[in-house]
Image 1 (spheres, rainbow, N blue to C red):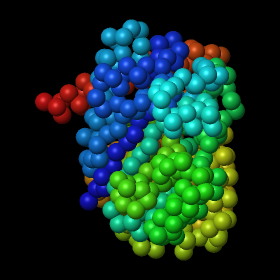
Image 2 (spheres, rainbow, N blue to C red):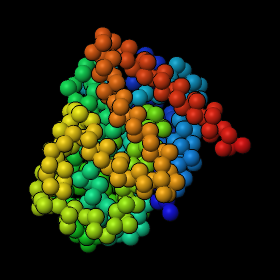
Image 3 (cartoon, rainbow, N blue to C red):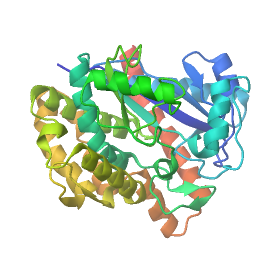
Image 4 (cartoon, rainbow, N blue to C red):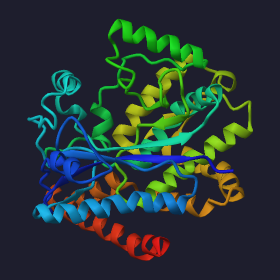
Length: 379
């Protein structure tokens, strides 16, 4: 049986030349299904929780098509690939809601380090203790999902030296988040953070993976993977979702799969290892050398993902979503978006030229999926 899953997609808006322009006030006012972020240059939509991948694919594509059509009514505007202000401007914060005190706190505390676009993947797990085990496991493997999705090698028109500039600067908050041993541990810790002020509210837990639900921290029903950069191609994104779901199905079928019992390292050592892995992958994505949580052995992120793929392909095939997992091979062989763009940069293209091409590629891929699959499904 498949798990329910959905995605929160943050997107920049702007001109086809790559200039990012804040339009979220108008979008949220005129289009249902979109919400504003603190900075007006990006906007977010969320898919409903779905079990089938074909329906999820169209739930990803259709809102973007609606948004694209709306943007044309405003002028020469489009949607942007990438997870940072790739061509600028990081010097100014453009408030989408000047009267929102939480937005004021974010601007004053973090400025434009949080003005990023990303994908949050939510997978439904109803049992709170199973959910905590899932969070423990996926938090230690979250860097691998960043490696597959990295799409932010530029900032203010220059290469930064990182494949995911977004994750290299994003302020993970609070500074120390433990591996939660139980649901009660998570409740107690969250209540303590709210009293201490290290979290402004229950949403102010900015870490690679967190438990989520309708009444956090008490009522929980899903795992939220927050580390991924924006994946502009929906087929590639579904492959990443499929890898995550297959891993969670495997975990639910194997009660022993838990870092607290299957690792040679202590919880504190596991957190140190994972932080180092995140930093290495933010720099070098699939090519990064990382350490495995089970025994600390070194390997590349790509090799770890290949090994996981080998483990999880039978799971995905058994549950009839193997075809959605298989596009991972293309990402591993051709590179993620950051690697592809950096190759173009090394060949002499400028960042504006790279992004103008990427903007067209993103729009064409969405249109093709809309025409071939989603229109047929709607009929």
